[in-house]
Length: 320
Image (cartoon, rainbow, N blue to C red; front, side, top):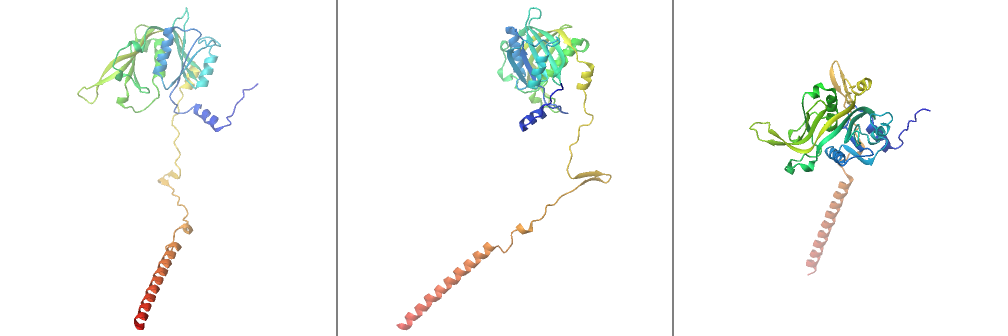
């Protein structure tokens, strides 16, 4: 049997389908945060604070999911279904077991199918509540972050290079061309302490006077911070990567109406609407004529009354 293609019947459904359709300039990526059948208190706090950092562009499921098993055949179907349902192209999956304690799986999807996966273990976690700082320095929701990757491992070790790409995709937000410096108030610092361990922390930026146009920047750690130990990772297929990285050479130009260009240059056509002469107001407005006639009639009646009063006065004088 073939796959049934459901056509949207209402305008609302049609707009929802068009919103999820591929675009030349994609919208900001959303992150799906969910958990497995068993989690630890530390892992729950990690998922909660990751959701707080991604507030506005993340969706979190707090129920247990038994059918999700990344890196296993058949264990990614439910994850792809949730990705399609929520329209999220990034996901964070947390699970805890004796073999892999405090386990996080970071991944991306393409066309709502698993694109790549990175599995890390969380160690030495410090929550935001454990840091003391001036609350005025707290980063604002939706602000644009800086990234600092320290260590040669991000250029030489394949696992760390892959983790760097996923972290950049997850926390950078929307891609923009221009940026106001006053709107940048946070930085993510990732330090490669070994060939498979990365120290991840979140800092606020404090701007101070430097005597020049560019202010002096100071880092204030606001949390969370943790050690990410890379356990497993799966790179995408080369064919899928080539399809996902495909770009348009020239973006389509917006068509301009009534403009034509040829060897003589650019020429425009101007349309003049028909002149509705019949609806134009005339100088001899009937209302004005009526008013003039009424005023003339009043003057005439007043004049006749004056003449009558004068004649009566004359008659009285003659009678005497």
